[in-house]
Length: 129
Image (tube, rainbow, N blue to C red; front, side):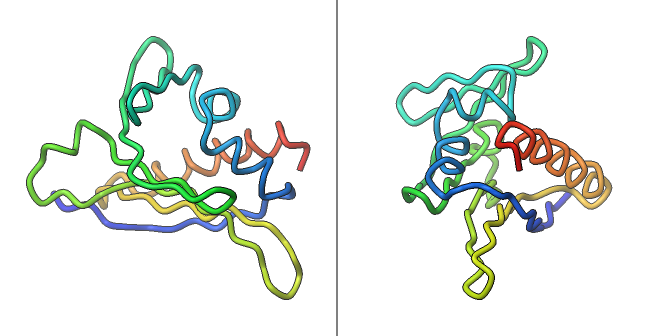
């Protein structure tokens, strides 16, 4: 089944550097995204309730974005999925938003988006936003 790309834009009241730290470091990610996070050779290991998922860091730009590819999909031919966390500043208002780009199968789309919204809500609570 083909995965569809989707994007969520969620307002987050935080500075770019603090937000980027939460998106790119093991300590930052383990506060809101996973129970624990380790890095070795650009591979991030995420732990949830005893389960482990690994993702390769594809690219990042300080205070702007991080982009990952789940290793379980890396070997699948033709799989172009990734997930990206991008910091977006509104030019007019100066508001900071987190732009989440991810892929999900059609029947998992709603659940996947709800999970991201829940995780980002946790991030917002940690940031006091």
